[in-house]
Length: 458
Image 1: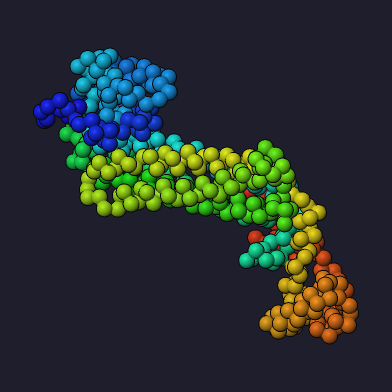
Image 2 (image 1 turned 90 degrees about the horizontal axis):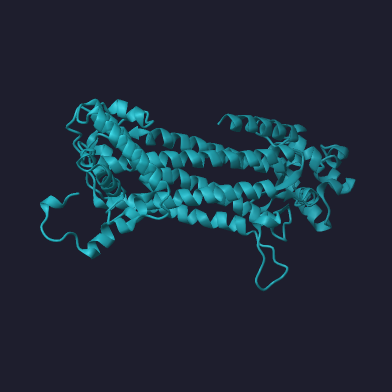
């Protein structure tokens, strides 16, 4: 491909082992062929190729696309340096000198940038699709459990009761934001660098906007120097995947805690758990731990590419050959954990009786007693202090607030009717928070239905 400038027998074998990228970039072979077909059309449109030559090249490229689908491993035995070299070699084998004409006006710099964008665009679209599916699984659970009381925590200490559906919807919100970030990334991926040449642009009268549309891009890049050296789209993709991974990891951590024997709030089905090689009784939440553990690798991929790019001068540098592996690996891992999350969520069951007991424990209705005092005219800070004393009294007696005797209640909260405190059961506490975004069963059910409608349209 570039041997005319050099003397001798060719590159050193050690250099080739470090330099050749076919084992990695074989994954973009179909994108390379798609880009080559479009480039052949552009060359024909500007008179570099005849109609007959164009037809022969397209036929050969389409046949090569089918051949590539049958090759299970990167064809390193071909001796090709990279996927672009392999495609060109095969064309020359089939078409002779005509195969050498396809690269007219094109550089591997704009070629690989185009291929990588095409692959990343397809990958992000698939991640988006599966993310929506996970959000739907959670919203479906939320709709089914809009009335089931569940303990919510701060600092992993009992805080206030909410419906289990409200917990599910919290993660729906996170995943919907992830979908919006994926959409933003897609919009910036969807710019074509093809026709930028090595860095200065092509010397042929290529209609780059038509070429971009041919490949499904929204537009052509505006600056050839930037176009061949830009990997922002890959860094941004990894950033979005990292945020998505953090959300999935938090969800996994919650469920690992809730499925533990100490909590026993949620149960996973057998298909996503594992046992112990030694302890017959064990039932480990391994699917969740895989999800949680994957987060580190996905975040690491982002850091890897950022460090590769941080000191590079314009334009293309060989360092950028290391741009694809972290993206390929992060996408693969993200899709695995998303599908695993969807499977785990769909199969899990709520221990509703246990959850209701735990939602009632820990004096989770204390805030509601304070709210009643505020409604009776007591300043909130004073109400907070007096209810704290009420909790301390209840703790000493080992009883819920609503079960304290009338003497204790009258002494500390004389403004309140004892009957109103007795009514602060978990069901009544849940129903009190009906402002937008609140956790009343009616709010949760409405939000679950609205989420399912939104997700259906994404």
